[in-house]
Image (tube, rainbow, N blue to C red):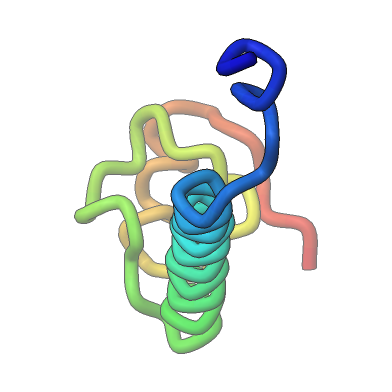
Length: 81
C-alpha cells in the first residue's frame, strides 16, 4: 500500500514547492531591479558597459561623448535624436 500513497501531496512537497516559487520570485525580482538600474544609469548619462563601446548594443543611442567619438572613429551607427 505504500506505493499507493507515494504521490500524495504532503508537507514536505508543499515546502519544496513553496521554496521553488520563492526562489523563482526572488530571481525575477533581482532581474527586474537590474534592468531598472541599467535604465536609470543610462538616463543619467552613466555608461553601463564600463566605458567599452565596442560590442555595446546601446552605442547607437548613447549620448555620452565617448560613444560620439567611437561612432566618429569607426563610422558606426549614428545616434537617432
